[in-house]
Every structure is written in C-alpha cells, then in structure tokens.
Length: 319
Image 1 (cartoon, one colour):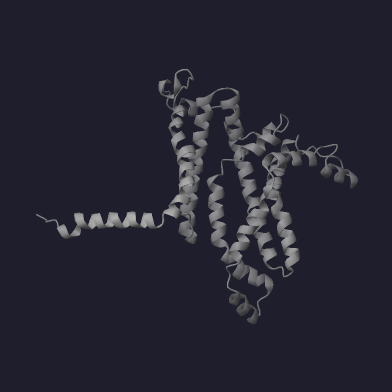
Image 2 (image 1 turned 180 degrees about the vertical axis):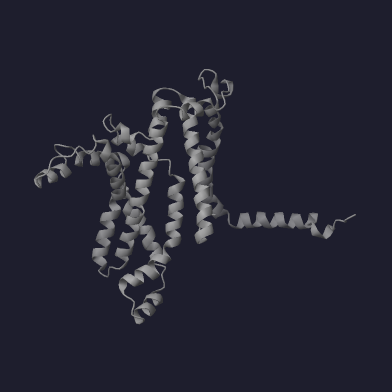
C-alpha cells in the first residue's frame, strides 16, 4: 500500500508564514490596491450583481410577482425568437454590418499609422493626428446628427456637392442599400484616429537599428514597412481583432437607433434595436432578455474561439 509523504504537504507553520507574507505585501502596496478598488467595485456592482436577473430569460416575467415569483418557461422565448419572421433578417443585418465594419475599419487605422510613421515633417504629422483624432471626442448623438445633416437630400453638404458636379441627390438615409455604408464609413471617420494612435505607439518600439541595417542592405522604404514595421504591430493587430470579434454581434445600439427610420428598417434593424423594441417599447421583458442572452453567449463563444485560434497560429492572445 502506497504511503503518503508528509514532507510534500506544507506544515501549519509554513502556511502561517505564507499568509503573513501576503498580508505584509498587501499592506506594503496598499496604495496600488486602493487604486484598483473603484474599478473592482464598478464591475461587481454594475456587472456581476445584476446577473441574477438573467433568469428572467427563462421565465414568464410578471412585474407584480417579481423575478422569483414569476413562473419558469424554460427555452420557450428562445424557440419563439428562432422561429420568428425577423430572426434571419436580424442575423443578416447584424452580421453584415459587423463584417463590413471589420473589413473596412481595421485596415484604415493600420495604413494611416504606417503612413504617419514615415512622415518626417513633425508639424504636418501633428496636424494630421489632431484632425483624425478629434472626431473620437464627439458623442454618438452629435455624430449621428452631423451625419443626418451632411447627408440630407436637399440641404446636406454631400448632396450639394453631388449636385454641383452635375449629379442627382442620393437619399442616403432613406435607401436601405446605403445604410451599412453610411454607418461603417461614419464610424471609421470617428474612430480611425484612436486606432492610429494605438498602432503608432506600437511602432515607436521598433528598434531604429533594424531600419539602419535594412537601408545599408539596400531595402526600399516599402520593403522596410513590409518586413520591419508591419510585423512589429502584428501582436497589436491580433489583440484588437480579438476584442472586435468579441463584440461581433453587438453592433452599437445608439448609433443604429439614431440613424434608423422606417424607410431603411430593412437594413438597419439589428438584434440590439429589436431587443429595445421588444423589451422597453412592447414590455416583453423576458423575451428581450432571452434574445440579449443569446447575443452575449454568441459573442462569448466567438471571443474564446478567436483567442484560441490566434494563440495557436501567432502565439498572441488575451490570455
């Protein structure tokens, strides 16, 4: 019969010393932990504690009976959503906008960062950075109002320019075929400066000696960008890609809702706006919660899958 070696288990005295050492470290660095407490409290209060309400997705929620008193219905709300007329339309619109945004929104900040990194005129570089980064500080409501004003068929600057060039006004926000393009390009305009700063910070870590050695070997500027600068920001690109895919099904509700109207509903109705209409407008709280839970689970699975794939291919991941 195998015997257990008591030396492999820490003694009570060793555990006591380890515990005292941890408390000593905690006391020594209490300022750092104090800085972390507000963030920790925020996530606990506003993200974890409310999760008990997720159970209404599996109940027929009745306000007078409360969450605990409402009867269980299991997966009935999800079955209803999967079998509804809107299901495939919502999935198509949500995925269409997300894929479009990923294909256009990811490369442009990368190209802009690589271009700005090659500029030697410091004044012009700072002007371009300021101009491209400024829209990031504009709120979604104001940005949506600007888009609506700029694209108005009769008085919008874009249509006035089109008419000045001899063309005909385009109903950008009343034609479903234009909605995804308007949504994505306005998002690129607002956020490309922020993405550019992230990539410029990564490019700042490139060793100048690599460029000097490449220039001695006769490498052109494009060759140095391709073989030195671009590989240096690949880990940053992968991390941002994982984060974007993690919110793939969560197209920004505020902007879609503000640009949405009855004429472009065929292209602008996404899962988040449908949840708003079902839950807050029509009062179907359980049904809307079930759809929101389905959306969150899909995002979570995509995040795990892409993170694992990136770790296997590029050895870069969130964890």
